[in-house]
Length: 373
Image (cartoon, rainbow, N blue to C red; front, side, top):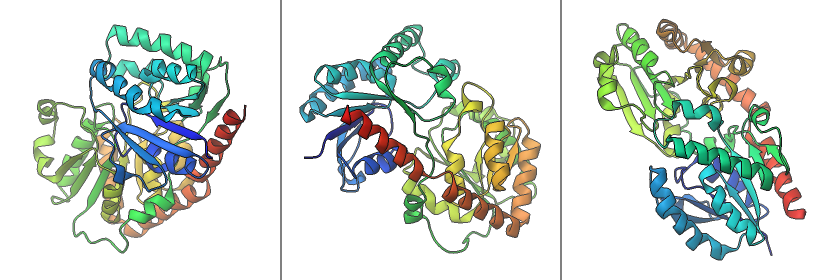
């Protein structure tokens, strides 16, 4: 009988790409997998693992009050051999599973010690103190997975094994939902995937697009991601009124639905400012654009330059330079052959170096070692 594994988050969306489309199917090759996520629906799974729906609350207080009770009610009966948690608020619950004989993996997906400085919610003094306390407990009692090499420097004193499992792209998954054929758009189209915020240069993007509109008045920009700026603040941004009709905000969207827009895109933007842990951690959108064969315009962090410039798949610019962003977008629009070449270069690099296959091997080896001991 296969060992039972529980993947657990009270924060991630029901169609989180890393958990639902990478980790769960990979583990299902060797284990009986249960995936518990907020608002999860059975039809989101591929039939190889079981999905469990949890309540969905943005407020940490409400999650602690309601969601965690539901987690215990729905998941304790599974009696998993291993529980893999993806958010620090679940560390206390993970101890319950550990007391019942289960192994625990705590996955660190961001450096919250640096990220608290830019968080706009769930950032109270008490929450920060509790995080530090429980994070310290996790280091002493759980195995850890890091999504970035840089996080190992923050977590240098561990009592249990750890592994780095990067969030690289999964080309086979992307190709399943990628629209085939040449571009069907008459006007330039640009895509943006990820959280929309000032820390991710939305103000710079708006100014750049206002300049671009003077030459290409009918361009379109598709924005897929949660909005972390109030509408009244967006409307105050210089240039926004000029381009508002050119922008389409879709909110958080399942990746399966996003990929069809890649065929018409002249560029994918992932422009992060040098705040919190951004300069030392990859934006996963970088590898997704590359896998989609869409040229990338991203920040000029050394970490990003090592990927983009060596691959020849786009441009690294200052996240404060709207003029450079507009210039690069115009160049990509007006040089279709070079644009296609950059897209192919990005895809080739993903297939050779930045793909999920190698990370899956690390993940499975780590699980085997933990469950063997």
